[in-house]
Image 1: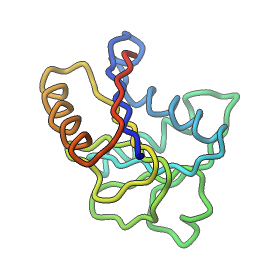
Image 2: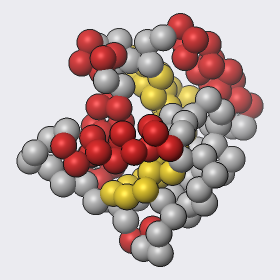
Image 3: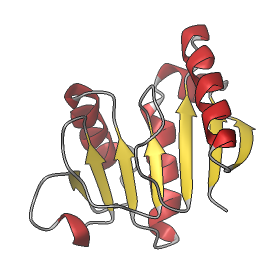
Image 4: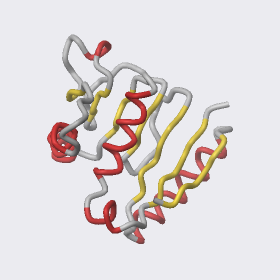
Length: 140
């Protein structure tokens, strides 16, 4: 059964910069050797995440790149803005306002503290349930 985990941002560290939580989740996935696809809302967010993955922790290197290159399948963490084709991965970190079109074993939804973000996450929660996902919530 596929699983969808919702990470609701509450801590100041993440509420000020939600992409830090994405970096932490990518670090855990890389440590567990889980190829990961991060679906961003737009190209600007993809670039910001790409930069942050280089600098968020000077003691950690997470192989990553923007999707769309020939070596995508060999890169641990792919960052895909809308409109960029990317290979399927067992783990997806979804930052978009809709559920992914295709998914692997697990989807991680990062939800900012903004009330509008929370409303959209409720719709995705119900959609995952309808699709037969096991759905969980974590306060961060």
